[in-house]
Length: 105
Image (cartoon, rainbow, N blue to C red):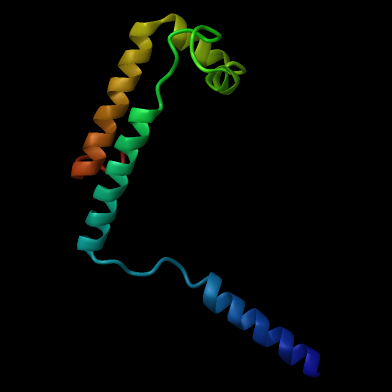
């Protein structure tokens, strides 16, 4: 009987702590979070750049990172598609950061 009460208390506490859902946030807090997250994405986009050629000049770490994916080789061979994708990503991050088309971006 005591074991059942202990298990029930543990389950109740687990449900209360971990399954309570997303807390209510004000519109200001969500806006600040969106802007901060947008700036973090900008910082990551500056650091993440696809190589000009897989296995070409660059660090061996980059070659190990990108080499197994065929689509990266395609983008490395077609610089215009790669740059268009990079610009589209910047536009999406800008739209997300300023709050325009946030769900789509």
